[in-house]
Image 1 (cartoon, helix red, strand yellow):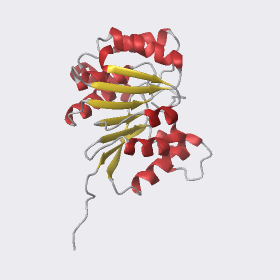
Image 2 (cartoon, one colour):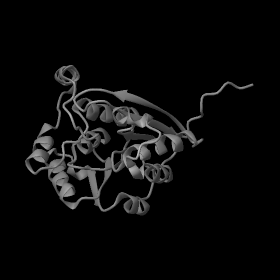
Image 3 (cartoon, one colour):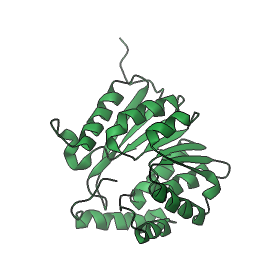
Image 4 (cartoon, one colour):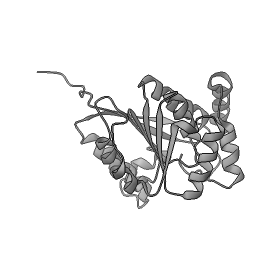
Amino acid sequence: MVERLNEPDAGWVAVDRYIADKLIGDDPVAALAANAAVGLPDIDVSAAQGKMLHLFAMMAGARRVLEVGTLGGYSTIWLARAVGDGGEVVTLEVDPHHASVARGNVDAAGVGERVDIRVGPAVETLATLDGAFDLIFVDADKPSNVVYLREALTLSRPGTVIVFDNVVREGGVLEADSDDDRIRGTRALFDAVAAEPRLSATAVQTVGAKKWDGFLLAVVGASPDRTES
């Protein structure tokens, strides 16, 4: 998730806790504790968002998932649970230390046999993969968003679900003259998705323990909504 320079709104955090207590169930919090113990940045998705990704994968009937940006494997575990026995999550991580922590976490969560962790820059690793994936989740360096979108499309089929994280950036996405490469990369992503006829897409804002941000959601091969003349 987006880097948090200030504390999130207390009310948002309280609601996230309420949601987690009522609905989340078996949250793999041990992975978060392991991440914190070795100093990984606290930029994972929230519990509610992790469960949302899990449900997206289940709704898509996903058996093969691609994740760009592993960190410590928290979201990876949610996705690996969704693909079930015999399913596969291929996850890409640039930092060998993060990848090592993630390997320990997915193994400890009992889903290690479903997870293939590839180490190296994703812009290079993506070119070595064969499609098609049923769901693709991108939560990596934002300046490369358009590259990740292009590669995701080559690894997709009609019906593939593509999800990008951190697309609101506390409203920063509105800053057309921003010199922040992450905002510029996010705005370029919106432009690229809007110009891609193979995609039907929207974005949703989120607030909570991870502050104000959002997800871009797209489906490959869906016909755009239009009124026939």
